[in-house]
Each structure stands twice: as C-alpha cells, then as structure tokens.
Image 1 (cartoon, rainbow, N blue to C red):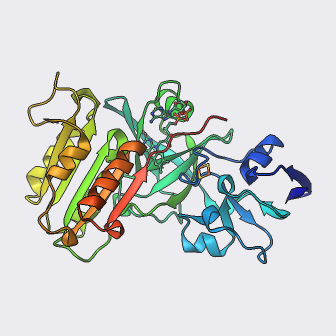
Image 2 (image 1 turned 135 degrees about the vertical axis):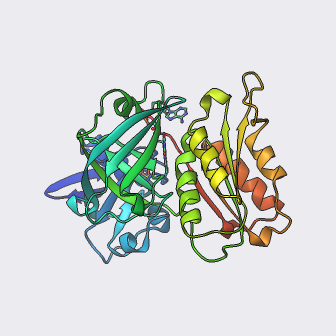
Image 3 (image 1 turned 135 degrees about the horizontal axis):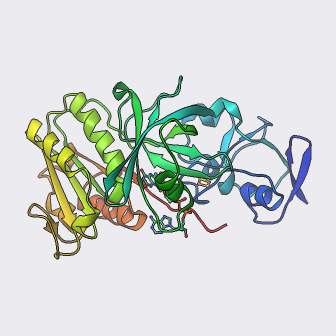
Length: 326
Ligand SMILES: Cc1cc2nc3c(=O)[nH]c(=O)nc-3n(C[C@H](O)[C@H](O)[C@H](O)COP(=O)(O)OP(=O)(O)OC[C@H]3O[C@@H](n4cnc5c(N)ncnc54)[C@H](O)[C@@H]3O)c2cc1C
Ligand code: FES
C-alpha cells in the first residue's frame, strides 16, 4: 500500500487517489479550491529531493518553486511512498485590509496593504487564505507602484469566500495571502503590438492590471479592451475605463452584453468571442491577447484566436475555475 508521510503521521493513499484527497480524507487541512491544477491553492512540498515529481503536478508553477520541490497536491496520484510537507510560513504573507468598497454589479474592490517581500506583476493572481483554511484565488489589478494590492471580488450566491469578503471583511482586518502566481501580465518589448484584452465580469481585474502596466511602460500600439457581461447591469468601473480612454488615444474600451434590453449607448450586443474576433488586426504576428474570467468562454476565445492565426505563445489566459465540490 502507498503511504504519505507528513511530520510524524503515516497516511494511506488508495489507488488513483491524489495527495490532496488522501490528506483531506485523513483530516489534514490542506487549502484547496479548483482541484484541477489551476488555482495553485493546494501547494505542498516534497521532502525527499531524490523523488521525481510528475510534470502535471508542477504545471504552471514558477521555476523557483519547482526547484524547491513544490507541487500541486490535487494533481499527483502517487504510486510510491512520499514524504511531504505543508508550505508553512515561507510562502505566506500577512497583510491588512485597507479598503473594501462597492463597485456595483455585485463586485467589491478590496485593497490590501503590500506585505514586505511580496513581489508581483499586475495581472497575476494570489491565493487568499482565511483563518479556517478556506482558500480562493483573486487577480491583482494594481501595479507595485500603486502601493496596494487591488482585488475585484464578485459575489457568488452562497459563495463562502466572496460572501465573507462582501459582508464581513472590514478595513483594518488581518489577511493572509500566498503567491503571486500566473503569467497573465504585460511584458515589455514589442511596444507597437496590438493588445487584445477580453474578459467577463471580474475578469476585468487582471485585464486592468495588464492595461495599467502597458500604459505605464509607454505601450504605443493599439490596446482594445472588451468587457463582457450578460447585461449592462453586470458592467462596472465604466467611468474609470472611460477616463483611461480619454487620456490615451491608443486605448479603446468596448462593453459587450448578451441582452439588448437595458444595454448602454456604447454597448455592443452579442457574444464576446464574436465581437473580439471582429476586431482582428491585419497582422496576427504583431498581436498579443489576454483572456480572463469565465472558463468556458476563455477556452472558446483562445481556440478562436488561435484558429484565426494568433500564436499560442502570444495568448495569456486565466480562467476563473470555481471551487470543486468537497
Ligand atoms: C486563477 C483564478 C483567478 C481568479 N480571480 C478572480 C477575481 O479576480 N475575482 C473574482 O471575483 N473571482 C476570481 N476567481 C474565482 C474565485 O477564486 C472564487 O472561485 C470565487 O470568488 C467563488 O468563491 P466562493 O468561495 O465565494 O464560492 P464557493 O463557495 O467556492 O462556491 C459556491 C458555489 O458556487 C459555485 N461557483 C463558484 N464560482 C462560480 C461561478 N463563477 N459561476 C457559477 N458558479 C460558481 C461553486 O462551484 C459552488 O457550487 C479566480 C479564480 C481563479 C482560479
Ligand atoms: S490547483 Fe490544486 S486545488 Fe487548485
């Protein structure tokens, strides 16, 4: 029988069971959310460096974590005994809530103080850890130069973390974050490229991060941001986006809604992927795209952009994969 060793405990693993499921079944509180290798909440460390970690269990992890033996517990079904450890204090940062404000559209903007040593790029995501072990990922809309971490949190009906952030969390409260993670950020060079940014709902948060960074870096090429929602009531930060367009001639923001009823004057009614494709640049070799939010839509937009001619290397995507049932 395969076993996990965690501190002084020995925990059995049944055939096909992941490290995460084996530990949870044994009552060990390992933070987790998506259980599909996306959110990186279930990060753990292998204690024996001689054991080879399967590539799938380290997919998406930055090199510095990979070389230290970190892996995603939901993505490893071990077939031999392993000694493992929880990440501990080294990866977690303590911070406080600076502000928690209503942006409309069931979204709150939560600003956190920057913990010492937390280094990120606008558009990446972090894991928010509640004291009881609840873990969820949120994208970072702000740049380090802003001096705070800006998160946009949409209320999910019955949602454990989003409900708590909407109803309970106040400025001054203590928080723990882990990260940053992900590759959804602007990189310098190719400053004339056409940048396509598309997302639904709070998918706007990482896109705003990318947009803010691109402008701060003096990106000169066209920047097209497509913000999708079911109806106009689901759009937010419209004044802030309009003011960005007014100040930067190369930026255009296009709200896209599915329902014509109540649509704003500037809204285009239609499916986000259709509208995005209709803005195709003449030369895909000088384009880059960032796609965030609803996982099915992100997958569809990625596929359609690729089929249209955009290289996979030029597509950066963060699907907001929800938590899996316990
Ligand atoms: C990389 C990444 C980045 C993310 N960034 C953001 C962000 O910037 N802003 C943000 O608001 N969210 C973001 N999310 C989603 C976030 O992590 C949580 O999943 C979300 O806040 C819901 O958590 P909850 O605890 O409130 O709901 P839960 O208690 O986890 O869910 C309650 C129920 O609702 C279902 N559910 C959860 N989400 C959805 C959904 N979107 N649509 C339909 N059903 C759902 C669950 O499956 C469950 O049945 C991101 C996710 C990932 C993986
Ligand atoms: S990556 Fe393992 S729970 Fe999300």
